Amino acid sequence: PSPPLPLLRLWYGSRHVERLAVSAADDDWAVEVGGCSALPSLSSLDLPGARLTAHGAAHLAAGLRALTHLRIADCHGLGAAGFGVLCGGCLQLVSLQLPNCKIALDAAAVRTMVDRFAGLTALDLGGNLLASAAVPPLC
Image 1: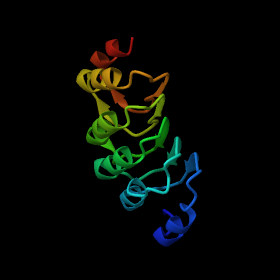
Image 2: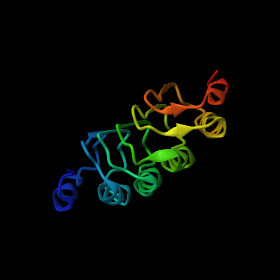
Image 3: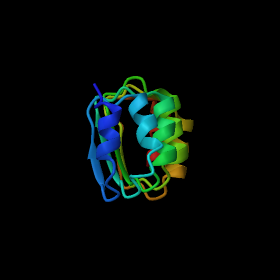
Image 4: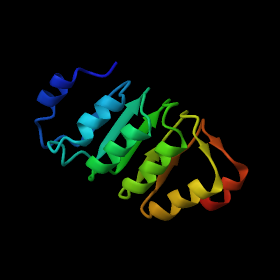
């Protein structure tokens, strides 16, 4: 489970945190962190085993504006809606890793991602349901 929110509030007092990894983060955690102005320097976020939905993804995308590296692994609740939210809000990403999230991605979703993430240099969509028509926009 995610760490207790009071503990997170105490720990996030550092305005100089650049990298953060949290196992099994959920929507409550994402709402708390996304609304936390104490993390202006956070550039790398790793969420293995996350339990996020599009709701949590929206809060992360809106609140973490310095984020350049995002990894959300094994998060089966994220779905295409969560993917779309991330594509709409995390425009500064250079690395996006969403392994084993079982997201069904069609050509339109992948094209939107490619168009929005102009600076993207690393992408991991392994373990997702990538339609064959979604491959050409990646080339």
